[in-house]
Amino acid sequence: MKVCVIGLGTIGTPVVEYVHEHGFQVCGYDLIKKPIENVEIFTDWEKVPRSDIYVVAVPSDNVENACRKISSKSKDSLVSIESTVPVGTCRRISETFNLQTLVHCPHRYWVEEPVDHGVKQLRVIGAINEESLERGLEFYRSLKVPLHVCPTIEIAETCKIAENTYRFVQIAFAEELRMICEEKKIPFDEVRKACNTKWNIEILDARDGIYGSCLPQDIGFLSRLTDRSPLLDGAILTDQNYKKWIKKR
Image (cartoon, rainbow, N blue to C red; front, side):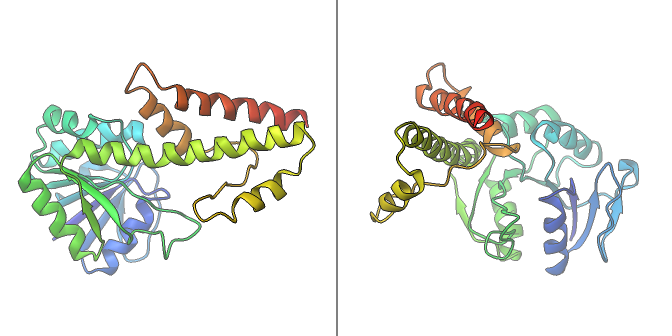
């Protein structure tokens, strides 16, 4: 069975390596040549062989283009979108490009702990139809990846962005608490340490603000699903204020 991983960045590279280790005939595609041992890498889409399975691991704004490329080679291969996408994206892409077998199995990869939080960890999966789900489960189970099956693909999409939004809100709370503590000349670290002795409390550290692409992007995806998101809007504003506060210190 042939597998093609599209996008060889932080997520795609370990996916290619992991799939190869589990005995699949795998190749990778990216715009930039990134040598991976024992894996054929392409930068010219026309040269990429038709595959039975395509794993999409590109940035969110490139997912549609990647699926357009896939549709030019095959419309009945299994397509697994591991990239984070706004809710409704997967079904719309399936209909737009007539991709008949498509699942969403968003990554939970944490680069700092690739063993415990790498490709193989409990993940969610949703599908556009029953056939897609069956093929998706067969593929990921052959990779020994444990899965929680979502009743719809939209639930899987929402789950991923909600996870990162939850983390954003947690950090924003810590940031606001730190600003309050320092305004009143109370040691934030000692308050945090004391709070975290309670069994159901885990206040995170407040560092330099929330950067990177994932958390800020995903809280935006979630907040745009509704006209009213005061908690999320407040968390975003808190982080903006905190970053300004840090620079002034």
